[in-house]
Structure formats: structure tokens, C-alpha cells
Length: 442
Image (tube, rainbow, N blue to C red; front, side):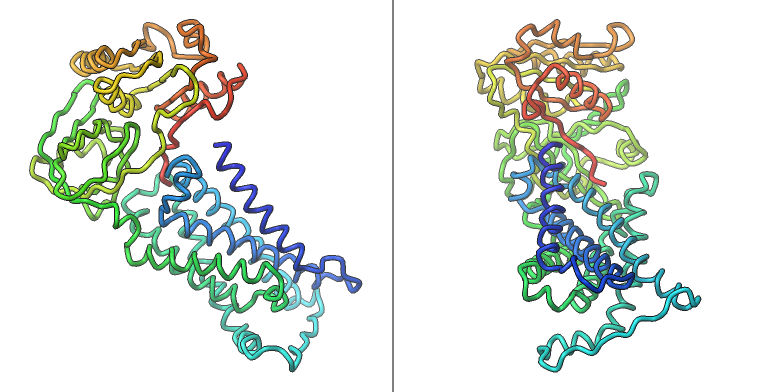
């Protein structure tokens, strides 16, 4: 979280600094319309800037995934950038239109608009001729983008409709690029911010075209077939075993993949619960948490085709400290099962304590977890909240006296993770020693 916050702030501050260098904010002839012009320039630069970076992140580039600590972090940054773009676009829209409405009402006098100097480059004269068109296109693109962004943020809006409609933001973005290119202050092109925005928007256009052409992640896709289904009734977990039909690059414990069981529903992310043994099989443990996952048991059958895209994620259990503490809640045990399978074949000298909190005592499932922990030489702390109380920082530090020498890996409900993270933070643990997947793709 800290890394993506730093990246987010650095980008906003960077755009602001470049704008300040290019914009003569300390002018002698300072009036309302000069202020309006300045605010519109700034909100326009930041608005299209963050949208461009969000569009680049939508392509799932490996560079950002590694630098930010996983695709889940990239998507969280993508979401923040989208919200920021929405806020700045609203401010930009209001500053563009409210003064016009005030002029129409007679509350403000319409300012005189000067003609561009004759020595202006032909391209800028062309842009000046397109101002009216660019303003109209920008206004309608704003309406469309704002509507789609709001729908993306509404959690009760069904995922399958979100999946279908969200890519249309790319169309709105392309229209906003035209709007921004035509209306950006001509003087900016002579400063560093002009070429920088040109490169940024060009990369964003590539991202938009990838999205519209459904090319995002295509190089990481492989066809597969369901060859085994096993349902654990008590904890409503469906074990899905896939046989790969194409080349899989291999994966590390803790990584996830997007699975498309139904093209109409679109891809959903699930953690891979098996280690990679090059035998051409992947195992996923899918918890029935929502309408979609609850119905998978009824919809899926052996022999069904599945599209697998991945692997993604940096939840890789690579820490610098001597030992490790794992904390899992419910289906959050999945990446740890995968890692235990790896360690059973390739033991490590690290001491590892696994705290597994589950309210459902499915004996068959729990026995498989216990066996995996035993084979991997991991100390398992099985916690049933109703009988043992909730897993908290006091329980963990009592059970692991040398907790200061351990990296912490968490997977489970968001609030549970926040509580554990806050507890370790208060004890002074380094933020880089706490690892958590932010498993929210919208």
C-alpha cells in the first residue's frame, strides 16, 4: 500500500510541478477569467494525465506489476487514478460551464477572445479552428466517462455488466485525448510538459486500443479443460482441477490467474492452490462467496473448456528475515497450500508459523491442510473464532516470541488484514515486512 501511495502522489506532484513551470501563474492582469483559464489548464492536465496512466495500467504491463508489488497493487492504483480523473474532470467541467451560465444570466460580462498571432504554426491554427468541435466532443465524452466510472465504483452493479461496459471508457478516453490535444494551451508545447503529455497520451491511446480490441492479457492466455471437480459442502469450497492444453510458463506459490468459465461473464481472478510440477495441471479452490461463485458448482462439469490467463501477482513468500508468519482467514488459506506443496519438495530452514482462522470445521479439508503443514515442516495454529477467539496481534506474538525476526504474509478478509497490519505497525514492524494481496479488481 505504501508503495502505490508514493507512486500515486509522485505522479500527481510531478504533473503539478511541470504545469507550474509552464504556466505563468503570477500575472499582472489578474482577473476572474484569467483564474478560470489557469484552473481549467491545470485540471485538464491532471485529469487527462491520470486517465492516461490508468489506461496504461489497464494493459497489465509486467514492468508496473513488478515495480508496484503485484497486479493487485496495479489495479488499486488504477482505481485511485480513475477516481482522481473523475474528480478533476468534474471540477474542469464546472469551471468551463458555470461562468458561461453566469454570462448568459447577465452576472458576468463575456470576455473578448483574442486572435492567434499570424506567426502561429499551421497546426496550432488548425487546432484553433477545431475548438468548438473539441469542446462539444469533450463535454459528451465527460458525460459518458463519468457515468461508466460511477458504475465501476458501485459494488452492487453486477460484475458481468461491469466487465462489458467498462471497456467503453476507452472510447470516451480517445475522445478526451482529442479534446485535450486541441485545447491544451499552445505555449505548453514549447515547455517540457507538452511533449511529456504527448508521450503519455500516446501510450494511453495504445492502451485504449488494446482494450477495445480485447488484446489485454492475450499473450498470457492458455486453453484448459476441467478434469476434476470436488465440492466441500461444509465450507462451500469447490476444488477445480484443470488440464492445460497449451504452454504454461509456470507459476510460483501465491500467484493467481484469471479464469473465464463463461465468455458472457468474463474473467475472474482466483489464487492458484497447486505448486507447479510441470505436469500440465492447475488446481483452484473457489469459495462460494457471491452469486457467481456460489453457482459454479451447478454450472461447471468435467470436460468444460476454460480460458486461463496468468500467472499474476507478487505474493511470492520472498522475504529478507530469518522466519515467516503466515496468517490466513477462510479461503485465504489457498496460497499457503500452494507454498506448502512447494516446501514439501524443497524444504527451507526458515521457521514458519501458520495461523489459520476458519469458522467452518470441514474435517476432510482441515485434514488436508494439516497434512500439507506436516510435510512442509510448518507449525500450524488452527483457530476456530467461536471457541478460541479471534486471531489478533497478541495471540500471534505470544505464540511466536521471535516475531521481530519474521516477515508476515496475510491472505483473507480485508478488515481482518487491516487489523493484523495495524497491530504489527503499532509494534514497530517495518511496512515492507507485511505482505498482503489486495484482491479487489474493481
